[in-house]
Image (cartoon, rainbow, N blue to C red; front, side, top):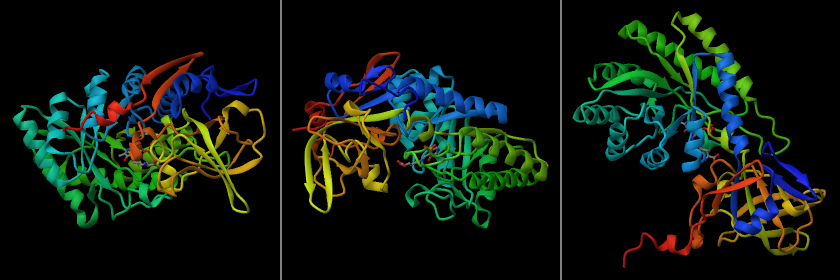
Length: 429
Ligand code: LLP
């Protein structure tokens, strides 16, 4: 639930705004973000990490959710941002985000994207391959710059999450493999390249992780590599970026680790491993996306069709679906939903909240509990703040929903709903 969610006179309120009224004013489907919640999660990360391990920085992983308003909010909170390519970089730039606080990711950043990033003056490029090292070095040389870089390594750690969003195992398209000392040997090439400066190592083991132990294992691999680099090259690595943040509770019964526990495990693992290998403790960076944006966001829909298949199930069709939230179709993700205009009533029915798209797999909630649905009801789906709008599409010619930030009883439209004209904007006769 968004942190400011409450129920008054049967209506769901977020940020002091009546979600039923907002849906009427703005139309549905609509993404709504609790601005206080977004800010408080960033602060929670910053505070938890500075308490557990003061030499640390928080980087918001903008792939979870980004528009200009979000980039501005992250800048105001003093956090860094990571972008996964030229598009997210352009949004951050348009928002006036300080470029020295930008980290650039991607396993195949195009030469053009690299050039855009280096000339914009981004703080750090996360090198993902040996080939990319030469590209970055060459572009930086041409632009007369020395670019700070991290090297992303694949620590060979298996995280307990959906196989599509696991990234730390040895068989991965991401990063420099540790096999046959490939990453280790490439460090020499990075150090020898004149127009890059090796500032740190990067690892990311996966997303929506509940158990913290794999983070500790990955840190052990990273610190051992730092020690070997010091021994062989006489070079001390300053930064260790440990990738994405903790998982979140999509269902009331989910019990992910807290941000505080995550920070503590990180600090403990670093202290232990650095003492073991006799290296200085690096600055640590973490790149949470989901745990900052997911709970703050909800999606509002209107119920358009009801179908009861006797002995099978009840379908509640809403005016959106896999175009605004593909996670259910893609990962069988779970979500909690309520009827925003009956939020004080018990959820006594089990229904499938299906979308309006031409696919059987198009659903937002599979067999979830809900109040008794009626035509015209406003449904609120929780936990949709991350990887929903950012993975949205125009499937079936569906214009993307708008985005509203709510705070202190005020609603602020920060991205307008797409129009049919937007669907046609790129076509050439
Ligand atoms: N850093 C890197 C390098 C990443 O690849 C990711 C996520 C993050 C940070 C942020 O991780 P988080 O804190 O959000 O767990 N579309 C999937 C999630 C894919 C995550 C990709 N990388 C989903 O909807 O569950």
